Amino acid sequence: MSEITVVHLMRHGEVHNPDGVLYGRRAGYHLSELGREMAERVADHLQNRDITYVVSSPLERAQETAAPVAKSHGLVVASDARLLEAENVFEGKTFGVGDGALRKPANWKHLTNPFKPSWGEPYVEQVVRMTSAIEAARDAARGHEAVAVSHQLPIWIVRSFAEKRRLWHDPRRRQCTLASLTSFTYEDDRLVSVGYSEPARDLVPAHLLAGAKPVKGKSKAFGA
Image (cartoon, rainbow, N blue to C red; front, side):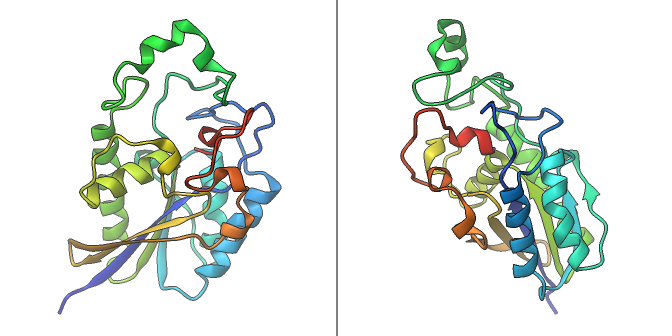
């Protein structure tokens, strides 16, 4: 008899980031009050699911997002560095529309190859590590469900790979909003479906939703 296992890749909630920088893998960035509300909302949404394993990126914003889910199921949050945010040369810089890093010619050399991409961790490397992390979570929750908290770009890239889409893309079109769930369902070791849901959609600022128009001084990259 086949064994069904579900791994929910969860993006972290909103981060307190008053300076509007691309925080990337930097430590010290925590959830905002709204971000904590998002995390609690998702925990409530998953309360009656058969979750037996919760794992997170080591970054504070991800660990804090995972905590309410783990608590509601009597679990401890595990840590997996394979769920980390993607590396990015613009980390620590502002990246808004009409201002920030892209106005400086010295940074343009990093924008030469959007297919790799030239400004950060190659998409293929993200697929490899994220796939490995998802499979480890699947193995830890065999016959049940797992929640793995990560970051927007790695989640979107591994989903794109699983759904056989090209990896290079328009960042404004990523369907991976704050506190969303991208759910991988396995029959034994075979991936049979990928689903997507937004339990906290009503809490997400409008400019951070997929397809939203850029706003001067604000960037979707902040919530990576």
